[in-house]
Amino acid sequence: MTETEAQRQKEIQQAEELLFAGPQAVGFAKGLFLGHFVSDWVMPYPRIPAAQQIEADKSLAEVRQFLDEKLDPSAIDRQADIPREVIDGLGRFGVLGMTAPKEFGGRGFSQMANCKILEEIGRRCASTSVFVNAHHSIGIRALLLFGSHAQKQTWLPRLVTGEQLAAFALTEEQAGSDAANVQMQARPSEDGSHYILNGEKRYITNAAIAQVLTVMARTPVPGSNKTAISAFLVTPDMPGFTILEPRMPKLGIRGTATGRFAMRDVRVPKENILGPLGKGLRVALTVLDFGRTTFGACCTGAAKTCLQLAIRHANTRRQFNKTLGEFDLVRKKIARIAADAYAMEAMTTVTASLIDRGLEDYMIETAMLKVFTTELLWEAINDTFQIYGGSAYFTDLPLERMLRDARINQIGEGSNEVLTSFIGLVGMRGPGMEFKEIYDTMLKPLGGRIGKAWTAGMNRLGAAIRIPDVPVQSDELRSFASQLGRIIWRFNLAVNRALIAYREPILDMQLVQERIADAATELFASSCVLSRWDAEVQASRRNGSTPSEHSAAELFLRQSFRRARRLLGDLNDNEDRAVLGTANSVLSRAGNDD
Ligand SMILES: Cc1cc2nc3c(=O)[nH]c(=O)nc-3n(C[C@H](O)[C@H](O)[C@H](O)COP(=O)(O)OP(=O)(O)OC[C@H]3O[C@@H](n4cnc5c(N)ncnc54)[C@H](O)[C@@H]3O)c2cc1C
Image 1 (spheres, rainbow, N blue to C red):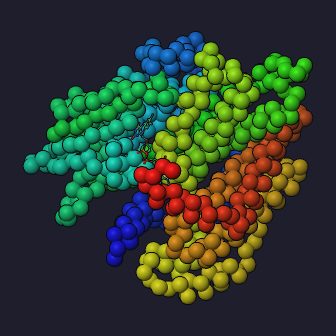
Image 2: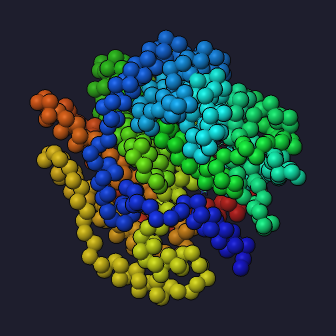
Image 3: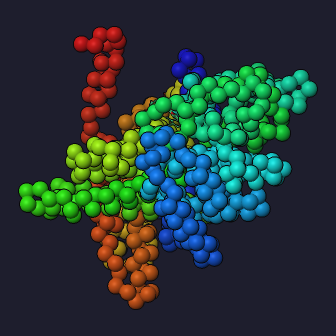
């Protein structure tokens, strides 16, 4: 077996262990890949339960007032620090423990309600939203999800109030996107009471201001010479813990403290292990799933700010004796921001509700949400920047800060490229399983069963595949529902074809994976938008009011359907060979810049 093949086998084994723990309900995204519209997960449009809505509204109003009075995003950026007064206030209003159970001092909010709060923060200040996410969405998440009752009792009460702050430390020099490559070592002490940690972590938000850090390190696998990742609760007062750099100077989200630290023979009690020994990678990926949901909420908030700013400027700035809003090229940008912001909110709400409703595996949906909202926010800021012209460039307006702040979103918590490939590959695993023979070939590249795989695939393709029903309540939306159903059907056909045409090499064909992942993401986004629009039409009908205008929803669906069709068409008609050939040619010219 060559080194590459051995690496591939290792990756597949890791992925299998991590992602496919056992039989689970088919989620929405996995359903799409099988040509189904699993309506229960997206329709009717999810709502926060009435009893919690009152509390959530009250909380939102309090937080909003606090942010209006105390949060100064521009000063936070200039001073590269979030004032303690702001952190204390966030703690006081429950923001730092929103989803923690009430018995440990948290608010016990659902993920949907929590997302509404994060959207509000995201509207104003990206530094503050990243700080809150680092503490609450990922910092205390492993404790919330995997901690024992005793661990929660010991650690949570001070964390949920903000008296103590948390960080989540996975990244190292050799473990960035390749999270499984963590090098920090944790070896058991002779008496087995402690683990002794050695290594360094970098790019860790809150590292220097946290009193509790969830740290990923490699532990020996008993009875073998292998190691696996485990999650540890570490406090900076443990001897041997050293902050190497508390605040690495950086482009954006400058208010956050992104740091580096070292652990030199740090003795961590074995009681501080979170979740099962050796299952730290699973812990980490589950934690990041939550982070990606609130990422979506923060991006939605920021996109709404872009819309407000763009409208304000387009209505007031005059050139050529007209307001900017009278020019179609400006109007086009504003319309798209409105449509995208509507979709971002819908997708965030639906994804958060999947968590609240107990869907076990929502990794594809959270990955889609993260990629979708971060890319659209980047475009929204760029378009708003353009509408403001030269004035956007200066620091008296928030746009240059928003542009700098937003750039991390496409990189952090799983870079968008890694997640796109993940969406494509994990999604295709479903139909791949149906083509059992093909799946075997994918797992065993040396199997040489191509002929059988082909036959199995052709049989599957020939099977009666129905256009799925998309059950909307409102008559006026039926044509959109039926278009969506048809594209899902086309998508499933395209996925099956790709699996048959490319077979095992598809595992490395990222340009194909990207088109499939992006098309699936459009379908998920469209489903969320249709569901939201349907619910709003129905609500206004129930209230006897005229349905409010929904041009943003309609525009999004039209544009999203077009993009999805184009992506599917491009699977058969593209310049991939030329793209890869050019890349090969320039990459091999190492050291020769000409
Ligand atoms: C401001 C900031 C805050 C952070 N906070 C935290 C934190 O709190 N905790 C924590 O653990 N980490 C944190 N990180 C680290 C962050 O999660 C990593 O930067 C991220 O995972 C990417 O890793 P990397 O920087 O090593 O990039 P690399 O892994 O070197 O990747 C660089 C680029 O290569 C491409 N790439 C990599 N792999 C693939 C692939 N398989 N397919 C296609 N393209 C690929 C992508 O375009 C990627 O952006 C933070 C980073 C920053 C900048």
